[in-house]
Length: 269
Image 1 (tube, rainbow, N blue to C red):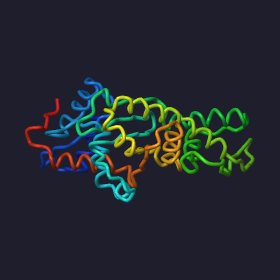
Image 2: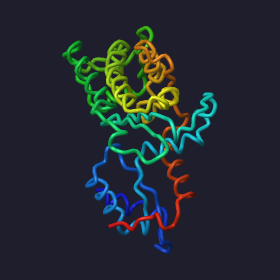
Image 3: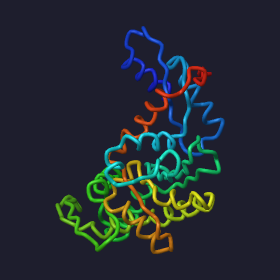
Image 4: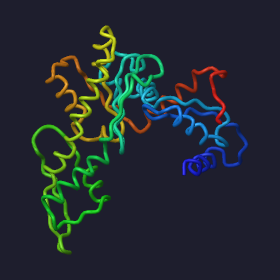
């Protein structure tokens, strides 16, 4: 499937096959050497030259150009002192960025992210409303439209059908409980990586915790993580959310491609 997708991309970028394409390819946090090799082999026939760069580092590079990050008042270079929390569908990836490509020691990952929240919602709904049969797609749509953490429970009225009859149910408490379920693991991951920081850089990293990925769109999550960290004694903790998380990695890849030397590019194999 990956090769089919790359061929499709090639047809969009260079439909006549007239150009030699060079590109930066993001690798997930903690990607093993074998996984990186798989990424490179997928690009054979698509790219003539390439660089495989950890996605958290690309995100940090992209933050330099992000309007929301600049407006947040952050005065720390995200490529030198930051902690990236990338909440995707299947995993949440955390990474220390300290001026160089992250090593395995700089990264951690766990399997609690968007899909996990969906599963938690489904479990709670089945427990409270055993006669209600919601599809996974509907669960995801309800979550994405109403997701939030922190503060008082909000109302989230949803029209559903039970035995063919329409009803309106309040999913606010269910959504809150499900979304809150990933906060403890995020905070624990941040603490674990902070232990690996040099003491003279910890304060700057603490002030530059970046919550990104699709999960950053959960309302109040950025503020909630900061609140929990400060309540646990990390009073210098400051979290930021980029204004355009979807283009963050792409912006970083462009910056890398503009500044890397020709002899640093690799041949796919």
